[in-house]
Picture (spheres, one colour):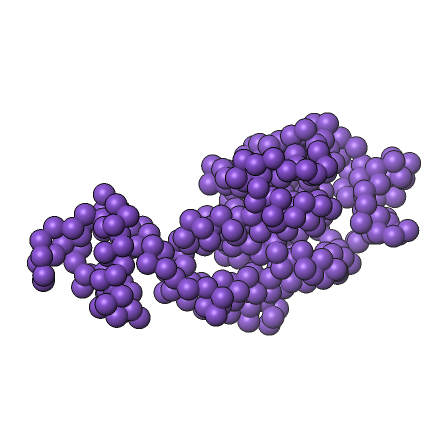
Length: 350
């Protein structure tokens, strides 16, 4: 897909005809915000149930707060996949090197994209998902040095061309501020669950296409932010990796939703991606919790001092010998302080 602003400047009046008549993005009428159109299908209900179950397993298996190493790996996967979808050529290894402040050889634009994305994702929790100015601030950082006016909505017509066909014409530039304001009102005020809201926002933002460039990566970034506010595990869950592997399905879901005038197909697609990402996280065949993983999770519970028995009550699947080794390693690493002896032993975090 490629953008075509020159074509649209010549054909701006055709927007009303080419845009699907059934699609009502967000219409402001008598100060009433219309809800973005979508249906709750059987597939959506099924996927929400599956995701809810997996989120419970994530918490039960102490993956809500991942180890620093796993967080770093997943953050790199997220950045690589989201930029790869947009044509960035840098590899996971090269992005890892950049994260580690090492020099890499690659296209200047691609390196700049990675540096910007690292800055945005490292400050993810500083952005407010329901705040439009925060949204613009994130775009400014993400696209700094890559577009002429980062952090500002476009002031000209744009469209998406796939092959030789015009696949999508975005709403006129003069409508963007109103449409985006309504979309953020939906985020702030509607009672939809975060899983639905995140998908609806992602699709509607893609449809509005508020920026000259960076719309795709902003859609994926903001969906992550919306989900993270409700479920901390999404801050480091690289569902973009799965999207990157199935890009045709991603674009097809967007097209089907455009044609139907509802975001139902896109919601189904994105929920299936989230479900697959959670399933991958829970695949213990490829991941084993270490002693330090367990200690870090236990520390996140806010417990100041505890016994080995207290520790084992949080990790019911480990033996007393494993618990003792964990705590000994914590002491050796300077993470824990041990006082008392035998059954009177008490541990506290330094």
